[in-house]
Image 1: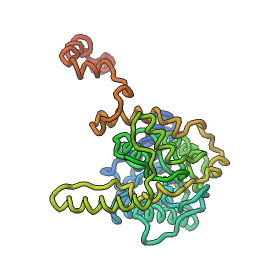
Image 2 (image 1 turned 45 degrees about the vertical axis):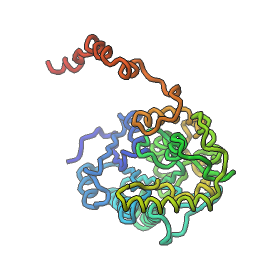
Image 3 (image 1 turned 135 degrees about the horizontal axis):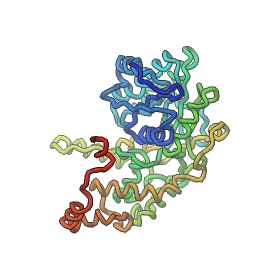
Image 4 (image 1 turned 180 degrees about the vertical axis):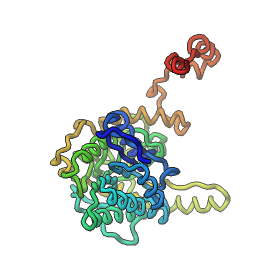
Length: 384
């Protein structure tokens, strides 16, 4: 049965709502557009995009007005999982959107692009067998969406992201893996070279663009856009800036050559295999498959985005202006999870209640029992 909505209220489906991008988009629509858009984010238990039957049954029941797909398999996934989630999932959702004649917003990745400067939206790497599973599956998905737009009239928009930054990255990957390595003092030197530039994508701005794209289908249908900050960033400078914010001594300003970094990576892989044979399980971060990218420039052109009807809601915000807030957010989070403890405690402001919990729990308990255990008046009135 279709859910009853007001005639003007739209119903959307978001796939991948538990990730950094999906969670940010979900929060935006929940807080900014609750009266005009109802966005559902079903878990994989309710809707597996790897299963075409699941998608048909769910969408037949819900009848959405649009679909947003932010789901990805972990970048280190094997070929089967990467193919099923990143490609077949995209295909299944696109087939459903085409059948329902509704917009489909697909979030893609700069992994589909070559290295280089000021790369335009029509650039892409050749589809070959030796690509990583992640890049191969994302590239195939883009190709199929273009083909379906031309052949079956799929109303889609592809949004390519570069290095994403923002809060609520619970998996610690991408840029936040780099940030974590510096904060954990696990990076003794700099694994890049000077003047290597990359583009960055602000997760907090993306929902505004997605919303705008949904409201202006004639302009954005069948198009690919690079959603990146206007100015690229030098990786070495960013690493040293993070180090400065954290008040750490490492990484030292010593640049490790790519050849040395590659040897180190292979050595660690061999050691981990040896350890696994005696029952010690560990693995290198999946991001190391992109080690070469640390040493090569890849900047995406934002000209098409800037020439569109979309207006940046926070034009002055960049990875550098966001760093202070990101530092506090992630240090607090990782500290609570006992993942790191090497930074200055003065960076994290503890509340009075938290301080009492640590040092005087009995006094805190007595205080709460005295002042803060009365039933919520608003809910008590409902029970009468």
